[in-house]
Amino acid sequence: MLALVGSRVWYRTVGSGVFHCERCGGDRPYRHRSGRRWAHLLGVPVASLGDAGEHLRCTCCRTCYRVELLAVPTMEQMLVALLAGTKAAVLAMLTAGGAGSPAARRRGIQMIRDAGAPEFDDARLAAALADPEAASLLPEADGPAVGLRPAIEALSVQLEIPARDWFLAKVVELGLADGSLSAAERDVAGTVARYLGMSAARARGVISLAEEAAQAG
Ligand SMILES: [Zn+2]
Image (cartoon, rainbow, N blue to C red; front, side):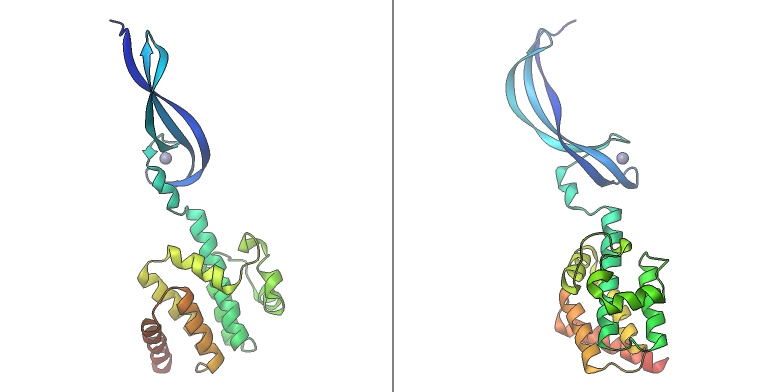
């Protein structure tokens, strides 16, 4: 039987982009849809009954999500932030001390490789140390030049608290690769910790632990 009058929601697309779809388990295109409820008469919309809310819909699996999901970084954004933050921290630490030490250079290169740039090598490191501004424009940094502060702050937003400790410990280990921390190296470690949003006390704890481990090993 045909409903003579009723109401239904019509959606229109107000935006699109890429987000992290939980259901698909990866980065997927989405449509940002806004709904309006209309009264209809014999299937013809005749009067708007108001807003029916907005949502994001994965164009692959059609699952709908709340718009707040857009605040969650995509996998790609996380990888970009990890690499940019790691690279900025390695360059800062090696510039403070250890740029001339083969062991420190090897460790720094390995950190950058592990962070998502497997092709990073000593020639690239040399170029980056000679000109940090140009280095941040290398393709794997993906994007405009970034300094230590914006790179680490962008990364810290995405790191859980234990991961911040882990990241700082890695940076301290790099500083220790050419012997005990110099004043300048300790300074870089403290600065990285501050940009990560860690308290001074917590940073001191992480730095001491890494120093003790280096002495024991
Ligand atoms: Zn999906």
